[in-house]
Length: 277
Ligand code: BQF
Image 1 (tube, rainbow, N blue to C red):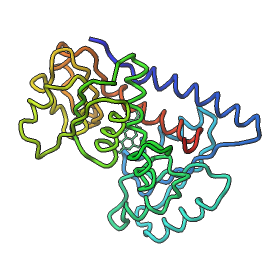
Image 2: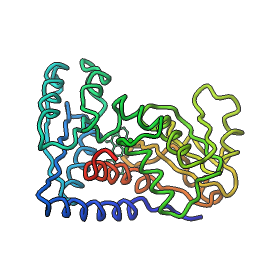
Image 3: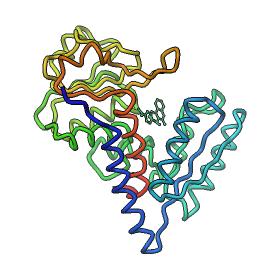
Image 4: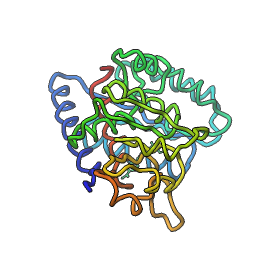
């Protein structure tokens, strides 16, 4: 079993970004990411902290907006409008989830597609779906980089994605398809889920259920990518995959923590540095 080291690979990407940002700086072009956090959800606060730290490391300026939990949708949209119109801002990130009084869709739609470093805007999604250049969503893009930089062949392989969210499952399937995998998307209504998963050469778990994927879902020699992140009582992190149960069956697997998570951050930095590409 090969452990896919997301921490090491994300570090490599951040180092590449750092060089790119420095080269831009020497041409007088600075990169700036606006990071917006509404409220003080503990997990979101940690994620935003990780992003600001990565900006510091790579040389990307970050401008932090920490708004009160009670912020109205109007106020947030006004801020986004202001940032859209600032030429010195290259990327706008609104940390999700948002408080109940704010509609996520309205916020995502308000971000200029040219600054949509999360890749959630319908224009970015459309570009991805028809193979045009555009911002790629960070987590699925990170999974592709993990596979490529680990020397895992994607073209021609059977890939099963478990989960169909707009943020991970759906774009993940599109990206694997773009890499010429044969792709199946499974979800809560899939019949014979285990049997379908057992067909996978590459199994990507993005279900949102702690340790749901055990060895009964995994073909011997499969590559397993765990996108889940859950905090168990105590505060130990785990994924959607029961790592201990599957580790002797797989050919390669990502751990949680230290697998896909750090890649999400690294790909955000790459998006900020490179712009729409
Ligand atoms: C690690 C996220 C669910 C919902 C909204 C490193 C992160 C996580 C884990 C991180 C995530 C998950 C982020 C590790 C950002 C990934 O060492 O394993 C980094 O900061 N993430 C987010 O911004 O929003 C989420 C998961």
